[in-house]
Amino acid sequence: MTGPEHYREAERLLGMAHRFTYGDGADATVGAALAAEAQAHATLALAAATAGQLADRYVGDGNHIDYWRTALGDRRMPTTLNEVEA
Image (cartoon, rainbow, N blue to C red):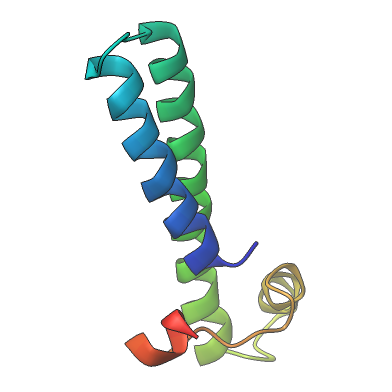
């Protein structure tokens, strides 16, 4: 999953968590589990965005950069909203 995909999944799961927590037939246990999963995806999106900016800016500046580029699938981070939506 890419950073933007993790972000979209976090938003989707957070919406589900809200419905399970506060909607008709609320189930706080399911809502909490969905919120935790949403948080994990949000954290991965943030890590990808941070690492992507670092990798794009400092390519070849050390092994740690190369490790992140490999983890990101050697993809450059999008620079415009159109690239994110593509």
